[in-house]
Structures are given as structure tokens and as C-alpha cells.
Image (cartoon, rainbow, N blue to C red; front, side, top):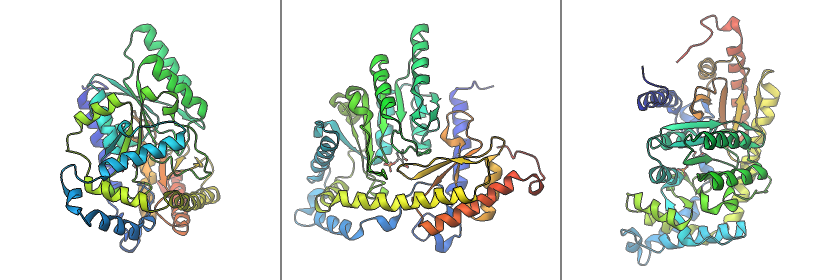
Length: 419
Ligand SMILES: Cc1ncc(COP(=O)(O)O)c(C=O)c1O
């Protein structure tokens, strides 16, 4: 039989998870979702297309093509490839009250590629990579392609429980057991829980990275979408030499641009450039995005997004409070796209899923967010895509599905559908 962490076991588990997600992904997420499908899909963290700045993007694209436009369509062409890192460096220097230099910034094809490059550069198959439990399944998947030993550490209202991490590191250092190479965390409005890591824990995790020599991937996909306007300092500010800070324009401009970035020490940036084999993130798209950012009031745009997503978060959490059966708990995120729901312990998320489909609502069940078998009574709901009225209706439908799955009279078959 395959061992628990053998490559075969790993592949099997991944196949199982993708199959589970594939069922979920079968819905239409285009702007036409509601016309063609009556399913209210709370599953993927899609920004609302109505919030894309189409006229401004059109103008920025036209500008990229005008004049000496052929340059931006050339290999490595145009000035966007230098203007965009300069913009990000200046923006973070201002926000973090420090100096980030443009050559500490690498533009990537979405933040997904930044995570992938970190895995390529740092991990050998026997290396360990650690995560919050739960964590973003895309990162779990891509980092697991490189380092096959994974481990998750619990979270509470303050985010990652760093004391558990410290204990495990100390135990390993004492016994000579392997230490992790990378620790992937999402400190702001985490995917999937919506939780935020406290300042103290950020500092502690940074200290642990410096003491035990591992690197932190600080994924800040949602950091600009905090509802109360308060931004905690990034983990990077406590350990710049041990942090790969990852950001993206997917949630704030549009995911179809596929532009993200990593801020890291120059030696790491050079290493990532060496393993970045596609010949560079599209110069044309970088030109367009640089034009856009230089021509709009981006802070005002972010303020609009925050207010819009805040109203949607309210619609979701207020309705959950009104209609969910007792014994269910959920987070109230201070930013980002997601609410994390924990159902009573015996609830089987696959049964909830069956009833949810009958009710025409969907979600992502907990298991794909863990590196082990946890999460069977949990689900992630995204409030980013739909307007408040639809969110309220979706949560009502979901509550009916949960009630049905908890009621033995309505589900006379086996207590668990299994997988
Ligand atoms: C935490 C987190 N990181 C990264 C990504 C990937 O984003 P990108 O479009 O920048 O590749 C997502 C997308 O859902 C995410 O939630």
C-alpha cells in the first residue's frame, strides 16, 4: 500500500480533490451566470465584472497601441516592463514607510506564477512546506508539485497559531528532524477563512523564520480590500530578508490581465528570473496596466471596491445570522472575499452539497483547503461576485440545504455519502 506521503498517495489525493472541485467549477461564471443558470454560485472568489474599469482600460489599451505601439508588442518591449515595477515599488515604499527598490520587484503572470516560482526555486521533492490550516487550495496544489511533504498549523481568531509552529520548530531543531523550507501564509483576510493575522503573530512568525532559516511566502492577494481602512504592517516589515511578499491585480483591476508581482531580496528575485521560463509576463499587458495606473485615481477605485464588498459581506453575514440552523458558526471577515462556515461536527459536507444543488446554490466544501483529511463539516462562501439581494437569496437557499442535510427524516440513506 502507498505510504501516507508517497508521491502516489499525493497524486491520488490531488485527483480526488480536483474531481470534487470540478463538479463545483461546472457552473457558468461569466457575467451571464444568472441568465443561463439559476444557481447562486458562492464557490469561486471572482471579482464582480461590473467593477472592472472598462472605459479606462480601453483608453489605456489604445494608448499602449498608439504612437510607437509596435514596441509594446515586441519581445520585452515597451516601457511598461519598467514602469510597472517602479509603480509597485513606490506604492509599497509609501504604504510601508520604507524603501522598496524596483529591482526587488518581479512582475509575474498572476500571483499564482509567483507562488509557482517560489516552489521551483526553493523546493526539492523531499523538502517540507508548511501552511495555515486551512489555506488556499491553489497554493497547496502548486507548492505540493515541488515539495511533497506538507503540514498545516491551526488558526484561531488571531490567525495562524504561531505558538504551535514555534513548538514544532523547537522540537525538530532539538531532535535534528528536517525543518521547513517555506511557510505559505495569507495574513490579510485569508482565503478561505477571511481571518487576519494579528500584529504580534506576524512579528513572531518573522522571528521564527530568521531563527530557523526558512522563508515566508506572504500572499497578500486581498490586502488592499480591508473594509475598515486599517492595514497592519506586512510580515515582510519584520523580516525582509526572509519574506517573499506576493501581490496581484486580479482582485483590484481584473484577473484576466494575469498580472501579479513578488517583492523579495534581489538575490531571490534573480533566482526567480532564472526559473521564470516563459520569456516574461506580457509586455503589452504591463504597458496597458502601467498606463491605467498612471491615468486614474487608483486609491479612489480601491475605496469604491472596499465599500461595495463590505456591503456584500454584510448581506451575507447578516442573513447567515437570521437563517442558519443553530450549531453553525461562521467568520465575519474584515476584508477580502470569503466567509468560512463551520457546521456541527457530524455534518457531512457532501450531503449538504447534494441538497445545495437541489436548492440551486453552491459553495466550496472544506477538504480541498487542508493538507490532511480535515474540513468535512466546513465550507467556503464567496460574497464577491453577486449583488446583496442575490447573496441574501443564496444564503436562504443554503440554510435550507443545511437543514435538510441535518434532518434524518429527509435523508434516510447512509449517514455519509463518502468519497
Ligand atoms: C490567496 C490567493 N492567492 C493567489 C490567488 C491567485 O490569484 P492570481 O489571479 O493573481 O493568480 C488567489 C485567487 O483566488 C488567492 O485567493
